Amino acid sequence: MMRAEEAAAAVLDAAGIDRVDLACTLGSGWGGAAGELGELVVELRADQVAGFASSDVPGHSGTLRVIRTAGGQHVLVIGARTHFYEGRDVDAVAHGVRTAAAAGARTMVLTNGCGGLNPDWAPGTPVLIRDHINLTSASPLRGAHFVDMTDLYSPRLRDIAREADPALPDGVYAQLPGPHYETPAEISYLRTIGADLVGMSTALEAIAARAAGMEVFGISLVTNLAAGISDEPLSHQEVIDAGKAAAPRIGGLLADIIDRAVRSS
Image 1: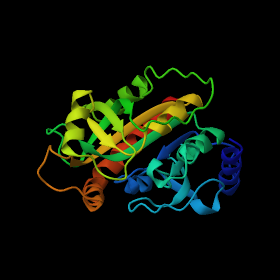
Image 2: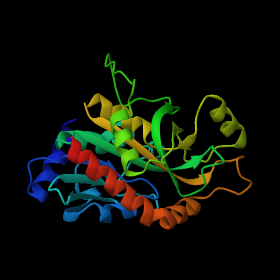
Image 3: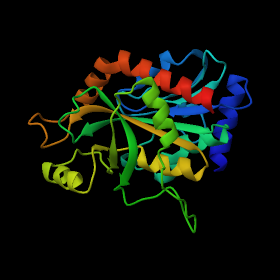
């Protein structure tokens, strides 16, 4: 927690502000959205801020940015997500969210690129996360820290998102440890237990955000159909390519949702 406070102080000092209003972690495929949010106030290399590291994952910027929206609110954009499969421990995974909370953010927006289990959701489809299944066998919480996960993904913010785009579907996101993709048998299992989306991030961060008292909003970009749903082989390049193709649309959508969220908070 002390490292999060140190990181937050460094970001706020560099930006010359007292607090941020909202924070957003940009996952695979969402990197172009930052440019749609407003005016850049400051950009920092993540590995120069306490507790962060440069990202080795293609499609992640490896930076922390503070952006001022047209309405004058400040958004912390985290382009340096640590994934559970990187082996740094669960506190490193939660560090971005905890830094956002320490910087004053009341809302945490979590985005990701993911595999889709619904064949009707073509690559490039944004899907609201209404719930998750944490299959990492880990938690960012320790000790007798009992946190309610009912309505973890804010119904209020999902309603705001549908004001921006009434056609947005929603689904249940399953986080697995990775870094390998799932087998067709595993995807069949995930469908059986109620998952609509599968990826390697988000759930652990959402738990940490709820524990820190933030309102949580999650949105996935379907970048590929999961193993066994399609006959095509899976690759991270496919994730990047789908994100690039969808960037103009999802960047504007995310900016609209965030603008509505900060104005309503």
